[in-house]
Amino acid sequence: MTKELNPNLGKLILRISIGGLMLPHGIAKFIHGHEFIKGMLAKKGLPEFIWLGVPIGEVVAPILIILGVFTRISSLLVAFTMVMTIYLVHEAGAFSITKTGGLSGELNLFYLLTSLALFFLGSGKYSIYKGNNGIFA
Image 1 (spheres, rainbow, N blue to C red):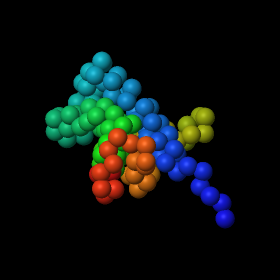
Image 2: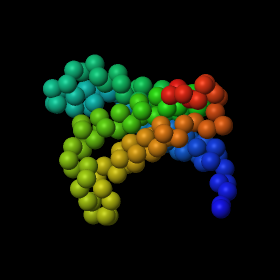
Image 3: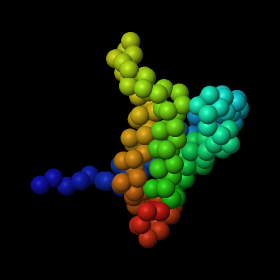
Image 4: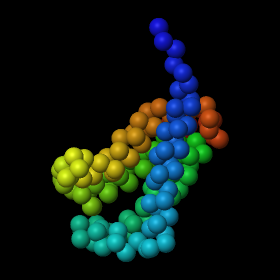
């Protein structure tokens, strides 16, 4: 039998990775504006106000994930944001192979899958919000 080294440290590293790497994407959109996103939404026939989900999914949720506050809900927000980016930007092309051998949408897929993993794992011991270890923890 092998003993797990430290699953809580692994969850912290996962939280810092997801939140810390997603946050600059959201900050960049604050600096450069959301017109690109609004245009993509309009092109797909979706209401333009949906762009408001971007600051939530790329700024608020990553900060909460890093802190370990409402980690499961925040992870689902990031995952949903990635589903939307795949739909709006990549579509089926997200699964096409690039010249370097990766998938065209691999970064989006990586954030989607790691966020889902964090949803199932929870925040771990090293978090600000302990909650009741339910869906909000």
